[in-house]
Every structure is written in C-alpha cells, then in structure tokens.
Image (cartoon, rainbow, N blue to C red; front, side, top):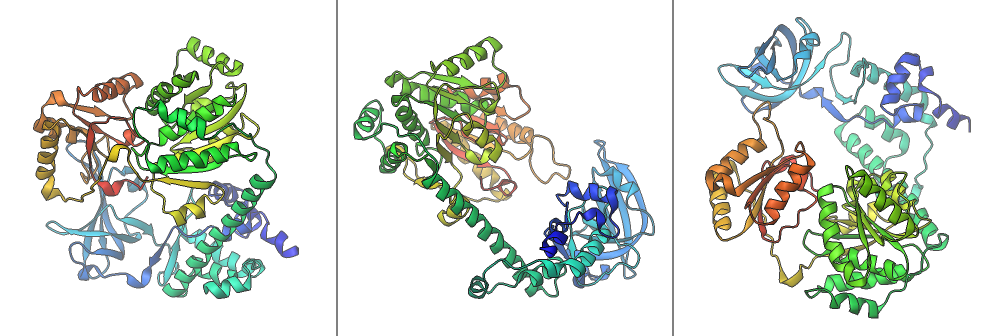
Length: 563
C-alpha cells in the first residue's frame, strides 16, 4: 500500500521540479509519479547514427551535429520569412533553412551546438530544408538511443531526460506487475519494470521494440476489461425499451421504397428489429461505404421507434449533411405519418423555438441535427432512439450528452470508415457490429488508382471525358492556401487548372472558410447538375448526395487519413 501511495505522489515534490515546473508538467497530463513514468517518448533519436557533413549526399535522411557559424533572417519576394543557419562539424559546412519560422532567430544563435535531422538537398551547396532541430546543452549525453519527449513552456529535453532517469531509479521498482504470468509467458512479454526502463532509455533496438509491444498489449488488455464490464452491465443490468417490430412492419417499409433492398440491408434490418424488440438497450455499430444505404437502415429504425410511440434523434457532423438527411429521411417517414424536424446552429430564432417546443410536446417524431441537438435547452417528450452518423466525428462526451436526454435509449452508430473486423472488435467490443458491402441496384464497382505527377494530364483528360459523358466529379485538395514550400497544390491552383480544362462555367469551389449561404448555394448548383466538377477541401468528406458523381480525384492523398 505504501508503494502505491508513493507512485501517486505529486510531481512537484520530485527533486528539481517545484510548483512552477509542476504546473507546466500538468499541461502535459503529468500530475503524479505514475503519470510521469507513463509519459512515453514521442520518438527516439539514434545518436549512434550521427553522420559527418563531409559524408552527406543529396536526398539523404540524416542526423548531423555541429556548431552554428552564423545566422540570418530574410524574406522571400512574397514576404515569407526565411531563417538560415550555417552549421560546421569540423568536416564541412551545411546550410540549414526554415520557412515561416522567424522566431528561430531568438532560439538558434552563433556558436551553439545543434543536432539536426532532415532531408539533405544540393543546390550550389549542401542544404537541409526545415530540419528538426535540438540544442545540445553542455555536458549532455550525446550518444546512444535517446528519448524525445513532447515539451511545453521552458521545459527542455535535457531536463525531461534527467527527471525521467532519477524517477526511474527511485520509483520504478514500486510499479507492480498486473498482467498474469501465464499471459506474459504466452505472449513473450517483458515485465513492467524492464519495459518502463527500456521504453524511456533503450539498451538496444530489440529491447525498445519489446517494451513497445508490452505497452501496446497492456493498453488493449485494459481496454478489453473495461469493454467486457460495460457489455455485461448492458446485457444484465440496464433496462431498455421493447419496441414493436417484426416482419409486417418491414414489409410495409419495403413497399414505400422505389427500389429493391440489398441482401445486406435486409440482414441488418432484421438484426435491428431483434435489438429494438429486446428489453435491453440496442448498442449497434453499422459500417458501410458511402452508397451502401445506411440512411435507409436509420430511417427504418426511426419508423420502428415512431410506431412504438417513441421519438428519434439523428445527429450528423455538418449542417450540409443535416439538411441532406432531413430531406431523405423525411421523404420516407412521411409515408408513415411521422413528423421530421431539423435543428442546426444559426437557425432563425423563431423557427428554432418552434422546433424545441414541438420536440418537448412530442409533435416531432424524428429530429435530424448537428451538435445543436446536445444543447441544454433541447428536451424530448419520449426519446427512444439515438442515431449518430459518422460517429467517429463526435467525442465520447458529445455522444453521451445526446444519449443522456433519455434514460436508456437504443443507439445506432454509423460510419463509412472501413474498419477491419478484428480492429472493430478490439475498439468497439461493447457494440454489436453490422457491415454492409453491397450497393443497391447492382451499383458500383469502385476502382482506385494511384498516379504520379507525370500522369496529371492523363487524369485531367479522363475527367474531361467523364464530364462530356454526363458524369460529375470531385477534386479534393488538402489545403486552401499556398503551401510555404510549395509541396502540395492548394485549392485555388487546382481550381484554375480544372477551369482551364473544362471551362469556368462547369466548375465550382467549396471550402470551410466560405459562409453557410455560399456553401449551400454551391452544393445546390452541384446537386442540380449546373456544375460538373466540385473542387473542395475535406469539407465534403461526410458525403454529398450526388447520384451522377462517379469520379473523385484526391490531390496529395498521403496528406489525408484513412477516415
């Protein structure tokens, strides 16, 4: 017990910390000794691999150490600040250049020792562009594999490394092991103490990898314990709503649709019927690519809730998607005499108050909205179903706030992000998982191609041919403004290129800095087919319903995440 108390000691009492530094460490989430020991490095610097400047070649990714001979701050023709430092290691000199970082003139000074890591270039002389840098302080260890921590304020790497060494020496033996011996043996995992020492100060690359493996397993192990507890609680202790659902309602729902459902949709509808008829709360994740018909499934769940006398809330991440889903869901639910409303930020005050009143009285059966749904003054008469579209766009607290507007509502989470089943079971083990892969009416065989810059003209020609054959398309860009080093095309540059190919009248541009009115106007023009190509940033990532859009070009695709 005494060991546990010492592990939970406030870091301010550690030698060399004090109240001021403790406040800075708290910004990093470090409040006690345990927090500090579990504050792992963000990366490592292998100082065994320092290269001499005389050995450098163009395109090398290199770590170099040298002394600053001189520095200068100048500006480009467009006014961008450029900071330069000439570095000498005794074997040669190299010019280090940083763009748009004028503050470096007060950080990097003549005669300082520097470690630099980056890509070597050669234009008239050896250069290293926008390298990562670290000041080498006197008497600091400069060999071995060293940790590099996230820092804040005036805390330095030297201070963090020194503090971590002292803390490991004094406290690490108190960190008891909680993974069962049999589990560690079966998985070939290091014990906790050895892992903590080697995650911070690796004796070798092998021990570093083994320590990382141990803590990755530990994190998932603890996550699974929490998930198992939540699942048991939901299954045996939480009372839910037994909705009226079954084959008759499903048949009636299918009859109002102007198309045949896929086998995947039928399967998921039956799963949701069973969930919602159960006396335990539904907690289901529905994943499927854009176009597989997830909105139809959500609409069916809303019909089940509505026919049982309960209200539904459908929360989506953007106003664009809210208006789109409001129309689509409303068209279907009107066939069942269910009233659908919408609630988003920036609504007319009078209309918003009317929606709130009708939600509270129960006159609105289904409300579609954004984060506006979780505001305190939003009340339901009888909320029985919560649907969260693109659920990864919302934080845990936001999801819980919406669920908290009822005792224990049924919950349906939807995502178009492809999640491998094993990963889904790991991260969402407390959810039942449904997957839809089929497209309605035999649509669409989707082909993905990677092309390089030399093939740009071919891509634009293909886009032109598709547009001439009545197709529409998206061109997605990672940036609105010009990149400081010109590494990626910005939205205006791409827009101008597409206009040159297709003509200005066929192309529209959309990005997050536009007003809501401008965005809605552009989207409406695109949906009506008045514009054939939409050049956009990731503002369109949650999906715009345009049936004729059959091509998407993603600029600098490596700049985007999987979702």
